[in-house]
Length: 177
Ligand code: AMP
Image 1 (cartoon, rainbow, N blue to C red):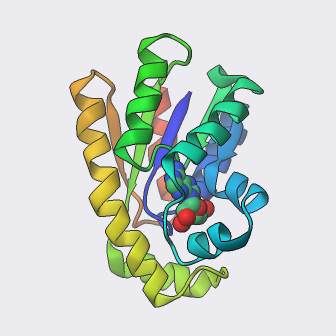
Image 2 (image 1 turned 60 degrees about the vertical axis):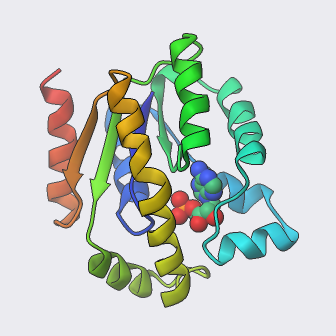
């Protein structure tokens, strides 16, 4: 399993899909799963850029993982919090899954803002983008430290380049193996 992480607007979904196609892997995005299965006030919160409750999300992802080939999967948008990261780490250490690689796409806030305002999805406006950036900094970055201290290497990629160049940089991580 490969994890691809980065703030909304970092290009992780586009790059995740491109990599999945190249490797012949399945691409699984928690954002996509949630947009399909969550409704009512939870969906409204989600559209404001708030993260979905860990317990609920872990249940959804656990179910999705048990129904698919985890070895050949790119997981996009999970984990996003320490609780999620610890749960996935436990699965890795129990050998239920195997985290082969973690790719972190780094993009500065200004680029994210510009890209998302251009994209114009329903949850893309200045406030929600700023919310997501704050959540990301607070919640996601400690995950990198946690995984590093458990011997899982995180490869940081500069996401502030053309789609093709980012794709090349990601692909080159696999050439070296
Ligand atoms: P994304 O498509 O990755 O930008 O995700 C869209 C929205 O789905 C996020 O703003 C969150 O509200 C929710 N979401 C996606 N992944 C997660 C996650 N791992 N934990 C909590 N909420 C999530």
